[in-house]
Image (tube, rainbow, N blue to C red; front, side):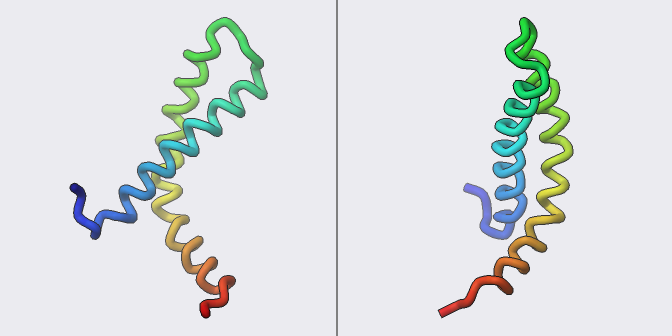
Length: 75
């Protein structure tokens, strides 16, 4: 198993993988429809989206956690 100190990196990796996978599918389908080479085009866009999403999540996730902790009232 992975040591807990790497939790933020594993979180960013899994979150960016899943979100870029789904979003690239939706956006590719929205822009092109179901064309003959849809899967190839989608996978190309997904690889690019994942490469962009991972570093963004690494930067943004701590800011989001801090913002949520300000907005949520603890009991």
